[in-house]
Picture 1 (cartoon, rainbow, N blue to C red):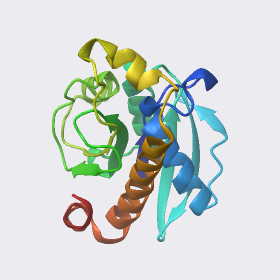
Picture 2 (cartoon, one colour; picture 1 turned 30 degrees about the horizontal axis):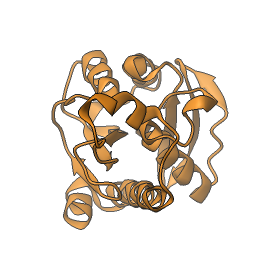
Picture 3 (cartoon, rainbow, N blue to C red; picture 1 turned 60 degrees about the vertical axis):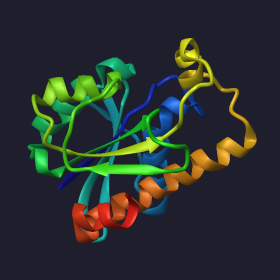
Amino acid sequence: MYLIVGLGNPESEYANTRHNMGFDTINKIAKQYNIEINKHKCKGIYGIGTIENEKVILLKPQTYMNLSGESVIEMMNFYKIDLKDLIVIYDDMDVEPGKIKIRKKGGAGSHNGMKSVVQNVNSEEFARIRVGIGTPKYENDRINFVIGKNIPEEEKEKLENGTEQAKNAIIEIIKNGIDSAMNKFN
């Protein structure tokens, strides 16, 4: 069983922001595979379903971003999920909007949500999909850039494309493995 985690912030004020690319991707997967995200446990909301004949848990941690790992490790422990079956989706400023990067393992970079996941699962050995959001025009505008809602329409389309690609990459990982997905999407 796969645990597919989308990182984001739980309150409506963060909906439709660059920081919620993980949540947006989970929503797309859930819609395509008719998986209801309505169960509450382990500091998150989640749904259980099937993607390409594989049982999956789709999780949206309801802690704030910086504590996402608490929800992830609790869910992994509760359902006895191995690290090899964990996939985390999150926004990344180092990736161009509309693009994604898939990795089998690696550090958290500057992303506080991923720092929390790495710290809580005590490993960097799990799959991740970074959804590109680009960088702000001014370095000191990073926070507003990430959680602000003033996204130009043309950029919204690129971000939408990024979450669509991330959704397709998840499906490819489940069907044909992460190497195939990396070859196809990176």
